[in-house]
Amino acid sequence: MTAKLLGAAFDMDGLIFETESVYYKAAEILLGRRGFPYTDELCRDVMGRPPRYCFEKFIETYNLPETWQALSDESEEIFLELLKEGYDTMPGLENLLGRLETLGLPKCVATSSSRRVADAALAKDGLRSRFAFVLTSDDITRGKPDPQVYLTAARRLGVPPENMAVFEDSSAGIAAAKSAGAACFALRAEHNREVDLSRADLVTRSLDDPQILSRFENR
Image (cartoon, rainbow, N blue to C red; front, side, top):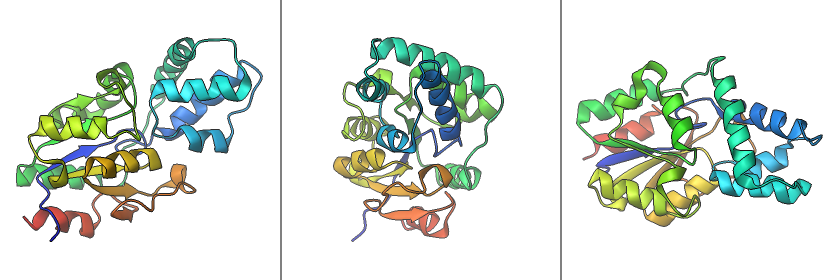
């Protein structure tokens, strides 16, 4: 029998917001300053991963002399400036949040981004107030694909992991959700068109897909 879904955890970039393109542009600028390209292959490798993994991969790929922390700080400044140009929410988000609120189900954000970035992004349209709490890379010691962030989310939501829905857009995030024992719904979009999302319970192009909504109704 399929477990009842009693709460939900949302990834942020590429899932709540169309910000993966902003990250891509920030990485292009960061590496371009050093004379290197940001490739699609590198993008797929770091998608959904915490900052340390991402920037250590940059260092490894291009033999950069800097620390991952220095690259992370510079990238964050670039990203926050680019964010001011505007960004959109992903398809179906408003309908899904509204349905969960009507049902009285708790929900949170669990992102690999930093606290500073998450706070800046979630200021859009008052979205932060619609989530019980936000977990970021600053709150955990082991990033996705490790399940720590989603096990922490379930505990703080007050639901067993098997009764929690996770919304993701990366293979690392899906792996984290499934390792935690949660149901996982993956959003397919332009930024992850070549990413393997096959481990998700459902892959959809809109967060208010009837198949998702029906899972919450069946309580």
